[in-house]
Image (cartoon, rainbow, N blue to C red; front, side):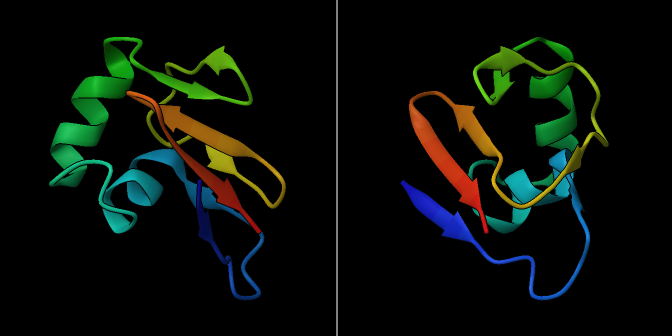
Length: 69
């Protein structure tokens, strides 16, 4: 499981997190995959592209997980 540090920020939009952590090649690709229901946040399918991901949450895409710290 990868970890992503918010570094003092309150949250990061889901599509941005996917791009920054290399789960996808681009933000546009991330938005498309989120809209298709292929991304989970804390075990639940998330359809909001700019969902606020906060410390302690886990994003799961195709078996790859990123924990936000």
